[in-house]
Length: 383
Picture 1: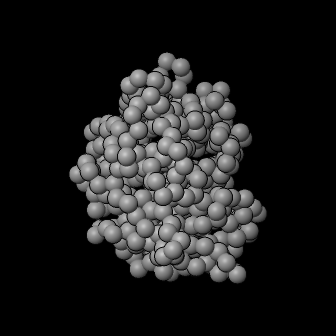
Picture 2: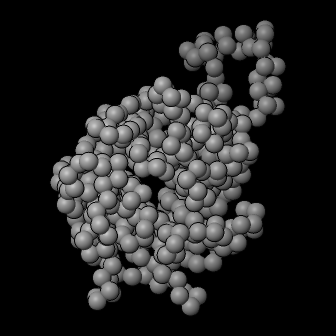
Picture 3: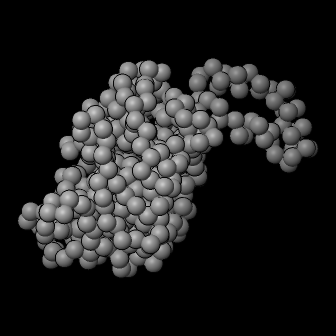
């Protein structure tokens, strides 16, 4: 079961969103410089209320992340700035962040422990920021080489000391993000047995045949996945020795965002406007099914048009357009929750296995999906 709500006008769209820890509040940006926070989000969508509109940014907000433990929100935007928002006495106050980048900020993510956050940027670098109490600001250390183009996405390993990046130079890379000032003893995670690297040193890189739009880690931290613009999903498995990489090709449009829902299943959303499920059957990863499925009554209506009427319509369309279906029939996705590309996806429950997730898209809608109530192959998904 899933529900969708037109939360901002269709002409605006939503670039990113984030939930607070107990899912009573939602932060989003309607494809401009505004950060809007809704309250009463545990109620039906029609009862959500706008509580704050924060306009500290000058240009379009491109990334939002709300840490579930500290309660702080980090935002970044095309104005080359990032702000850390702290709630106090009924007001959200922005903290200064020294990013030191010359081009737009594209994406931002808190580390799982909440001590650091990373910002992807058009400056071919990733500022990793931590707080300096003596100066009351967030300072950055740079991951620069060997990015050759815009960094589009970042993802933290569960240990908060490794970070994966996706870039428009067709590469996904894995770096050390260990910062002496904030981190405890160095944890190698799935790279146990290798020599620890200092901050910003690269461990691995993997190639794709297009821009790498999205990247994510599995709950255990033993699997890394990234989606590219050539309609492919790449899955890297760590298990001692060299990591094993598998590429999954699919025949629909590219992914813009991905999220692990278990160690053996991944959700992906993008230009097809319909979240897709990828699963590891034990013999390898493959596309499984779409989350949004056409209602039974519409399928019956399609069957009812079979026979002589359907044959006549097919020949008429071939004569007019060279297609066996009319353009309207091929493009009719009015039954889907989203009518435009899915831009962002987030897990709603903090458990290692996801049971509920949300998506936002350029159609201005937000959809909440309850996996247990949906017609999906839950066994294959590891749920």
